Length: 120
Image (tube, rainbow, N blue to C red; front, side, top):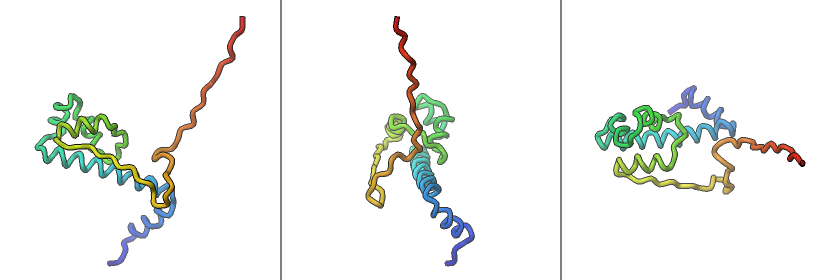
């Protein structure tokens, strides 16, 4: 099977380490979203039903099931899992090169602004 123009374009883009990292993170978010939606549907619940059981909004459930959302908290995933009779399992793995990457997110510089103490 020959490669499509998109396949060739994606291969080219994946040579950029920054793009490759963002692409990988997007895949991870997609996996979480699909798992949540599948478990909810298997339980026979709508987003609104699940929201009601969790005492949250349907919009929050929609956000959790969105592949673009990366703000999943472990506590919320546990709450959802409990209602859906599932469990949460988190796996951390070393990268292929054997070196742990810093953080999946870009670090934000943190500076403390100190004020001079007044002496009386």
